[in-house]
Length: 293
Ligand code: FAD
Image 1 (cartoon, rainbow, N blue to C red):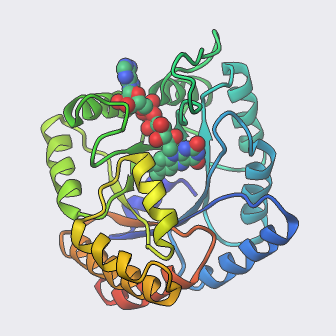
Image 2: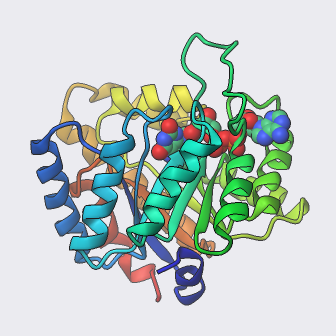
């Protein structure tokens, strides 16, 4: 089913993001995780794509297996960086042939230390161009999601400029957006106000990253420009090498964050699961009384 239609049906969408494992063993673990999370009946799940096409086949195979072997609605992430339009159309045609109706249209990160990276001549430089390419070639077949950045995208000179660029994706035909992780809801509410000011009215779903491994999440947060509040950092630093305590603090924090978002009427919660079910299930069980579908 198309996510744009599902979002009209539910008050609060719940969704989970996975990445395509490198090994067969990792894949089996992922499908165990999916089985555990399926009991929640999420609105949809999504599978990431390695920018430049590094996981092209693996992403496709996981998406296909979820689509064919579970009752879940699945969305394939697709990044345009490094691909020609012909490549992108081939990938999208293949997804259409197997019955996939949902794409998260992304640009992907510019490769590290390649500020002078040359986009292929017949490629898409920005995600908005990928959204246009999908609409031009596939009409309404796909429900298209895009990325949004409550603290601004790291390459953007300021938040307002980034919102103007976000609007290009909406005008090109995006149906909904999922945000980068953030740990202070004020950034999200401020971002929603700014989007409203710019006339953006598609559903914007907050991305939630439960902190279960502080070192890893701190690195991710630094890379994508997400601020971890000082108070939380100092709490986590004290227990950095005690995984159980880090997880306990991380879950408590995510529960409070989600409670506040739900009380403020968010359209959904998108969990970055890192292919594990434990933390997400614990969080979900503590907030489910606030989800009315
Ligand atoms: P864009 O929307 O194209 O924006 C990129 C930058 O260009 C921004 O700074 C924007 O302000 C600017 N910009 C846009 N249009 C213009 C214009 N016309 N002129 C000038 N500047 C412009 N990465 C992966 O590799 N694989 C994944 O599966 C993946 N999944 C993600 C899922 C979510 C929910 C999110 C939030 C991010 C994900 N990413 C993923 C990361 C994403 O690819 C990077 O953040 C990337 O750097 C930007 O992608 P984008 O689609 O937001 O790009």
